[in-house]
Image (cartoon, rainbow, N blue to C red; front, side, top):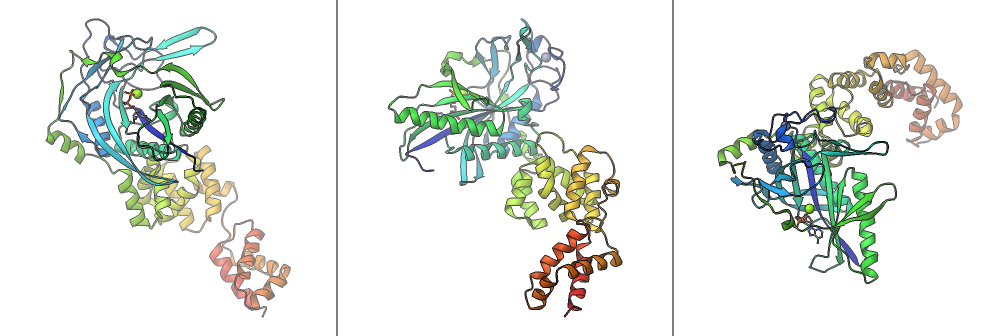
Length: 475
Ligand code: ADP
Ligand code: MG
Ligand code: ZN
């Protein structure tokens, strides 16, 4: 729907880097550890503790920058961002201010409303804060395991004009970061989180309106709902002659509404200054080249490869490449498949729907290949393969065994199939006459009845040839 107003959105995305250890100490970064078991004096900022920068955090951030078309700085500085909050024991966060690692990138996205380029202002490294656990029974507790987990913060230009574009951008970014191996991007575990800055203006207007910021949205669905609600709220306010207050707002998924949390701090309230314990980061062209050369295959290249090697449509290839773990599973399974294309169709037709997009693919490449080979050997047809795949998610059994247990083995016995064909022809004499009278597609209908008669288990090629033969005999 075209309204008099358009939305303007810029995103800030925080992504936890999957380095083995934290950004300034040797503490592990594993997610499910018991509270406060992964902290040392550096994490807690105890007096006298000194941070030492983790080289992998820089490498990962540069990878992210290269993968999103950024310029990589040869000189970067780490600054203290000073503020008080209970989850930040040092009362400052080590971040980057005016010399970030990466600047001036972009991503091209394909949303339902067409192709669109979104500028990336910057990517910088910083440390994560701890977590407050609120609980009605015993109040608020503090888990500081997350202190010092390395993050990148990516900031976009205010280039996004719809919820669909915001979603497409984040999905593309997520696929890129997964392929680049810098993060597991699990929104449900908070390793990828997004702040949405949104303002409205009359269409055609050049200056930006006053924005609000919605913090820490952690699912694509919430992001879309929050944007749609906040856009409408601002349009209603502006249409009624009110002005928008620059503030941070919270989206409540239960009500689908946004609520004011606090009016926005200005950047200089944080009293940024270079951390005196950390020297500047210098990267030579050679360092940057080496990181570029080691970049794994990214989604655009993957997509082109599937289109070229397997004749996939742009749409199918894009759907698969939005889920890099599925691509990895396919690439590992393909050499074990008699006909890899059958596995691709099975993955697009069913696994894409069953996979939640977070974490490992629930079926190993070897088992996927075994299932695809049952298709190639005509033991089962596609409908049965989908059923077997569903069962494989819950059972470690070999696909062959599941096929037998579910009674899905394809019927390729000529005698049995010929009987089914005769039954169908006897019961559908009118259709037979229609076909013999020249209506080719009546044969499709008859074929449908044969499949139904055999509970979908007839070997389709064999059944079709028997059917054709038998029907001609009734001329
Ligand atoms: P801050 O440092 O306060 O977070 P920035 O200027 O860095 O502010 O902007 C943060 C994000 O807000 C960026 O993604 C930017 O594109 C976006 N943004 C800035 N102004 C607007 C606006 N008027 N409307 C929508 N988004 C905006
Ligand atoms: Mg901000
Ligand atoms: Zn530590």
